[in-house]
Structures are given as structure tokens and as C-alpha cells.
Length: 135
Image (cartoon, rainbow, N blue to C red; front, side):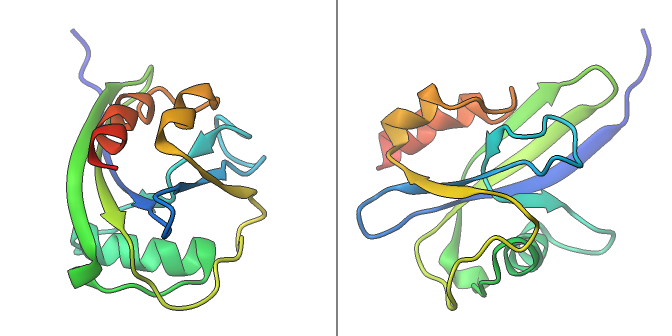
């Protein structure tokens, strides 16, 4: 049995006043380009998941949020070919600034039940049920 590295990333379901979820497309320069995903990214050395998520939301979408506005709801554990992904999912309903794609990605608001119809990475798909139940 070969041992794969574990990659830990963090993701966020931003929720608007109509209980829609923001998803963004993966940039063309990355693997799984064009697929829809929850915003977020890698946790850097020394960062907590919340610190990483605040940094990623600022870098990807130009918004600021606070640890008190982030609530963990679920996590994904998915075995990809070259690594194993562990991804906690947070929800956030409150942020400052205007959402704007900062990394050449598309973004759109989607009702939780409609997330099933999007082409999403395999690790993201199991998280949809939690959002449907919550919202």
C-alpha cells in the first residue's frame, strides 16, 4: 500500500440573504479547470483553518470576514489519485466589501438544491447535502 500525502484545504459556503450559496469556477491554470467549487484554498504553515479562510476570501473575492462569522458545518475526506484531501467546510453570512473575482474565475449564486446540477470536484459533492439540510 502506497502512502499518499494529505492535503488540507479549507472551503466556505458564503450565504446571501436569500439562502443562496456562492460558487466560483476553478481558473484555467489549475487542475479541474472550469469546475464549480466553494471558495477557499490551502492552509499555510502556522495558519488555523479560520485564518486561512479569511486570507483566501480576501485574495479570491476581495472581501473581509471575521472568525466570529465563520461556522464549521462539515468536512470532506476524499482520496484523489496523487493525494488525500481533507477539507473543512464553513458557512459565512456576514462579510465586508463587494464580492469580485480576483483570480480570473467566474462566480454565481445558486440555491443549495441546484448545486447537484453543477460540475463540481468529487470532494465538494458530498458537502451539498449538509447545505440543503441547513438552509
